[in-house]
Length: 210
Image (cartoon, rainbow, N blue to C red; front, top):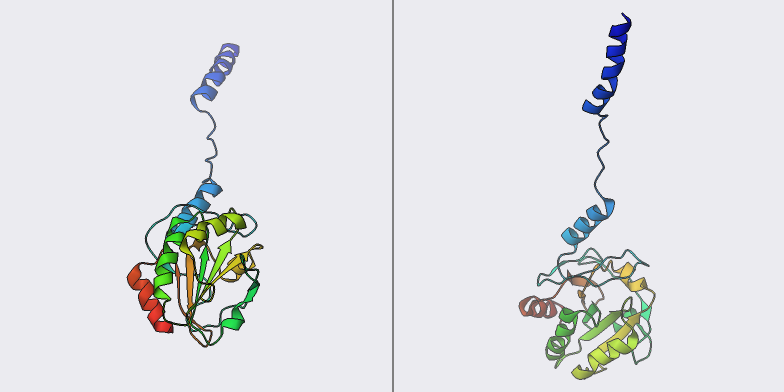
């Protein structure tokens, strides 16, 4: 009997070794899940994550434009008053009665800069007001001014504003740059897009608000 007990005790370490307790499986990395969601939702332009101070950060670019998550067609967009970049403060409400294109941009965004010469051509011979809101999370005002200098944009049509606090970015749910809002003369949204706009989309959207 004593021999049997000793044999059983001797076998116990071997049994623990052969049958280790099951380990708890780790769940998915929450940061990896967030990254997948941001890439899936914001793949239509320069992907921005409003993760720090609710301000945009520049990511990758594609050539696809998508409707925005902000103010929708037929609605009145939020009013704002922002400091000018080399000009006086401007308020959105003062442009009522004119067709308006609001563009959120950043000087580190090549598709944003590519829009300016095309907009300059499109704005000729009309009263279109282009309100270009510079998102300043990773981009100082002097960098923005230097980026725009080669274009010689006319101030009677181009109003370059600074969103230093990110208030307009939050109001308009900007997740990527460029983000564009086309406003009719009555101030309502005609179309809204995120990402670089091909010429046919840009021209068709402008034709709807003139």
